[in-house]
Length: 103
Picture (cartoon, rainbow, N blue to C red):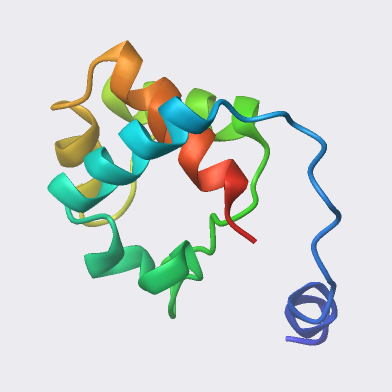
């Protein structure tokens, strides 16, 4: 618990990834369409066992979404695998742009 508390108190480092404003808009639209905030909450801040992904690195977000889609990564309830199966590469890239842009 002490280790979890330690990391929970850390501030996120700024992300120097340069986002494309059009892709950010596309990513927001896709996030709204597939109801990402039902689990990740508003601002993608997470809740309980659902992680905060706001401000994560672009390459990490893209890799994780592709891994969920390919079933290389799973979660207990299968929600991410189910949602990611509906995403095209362009959707994943746009979601990555949108989510990495959030603070």
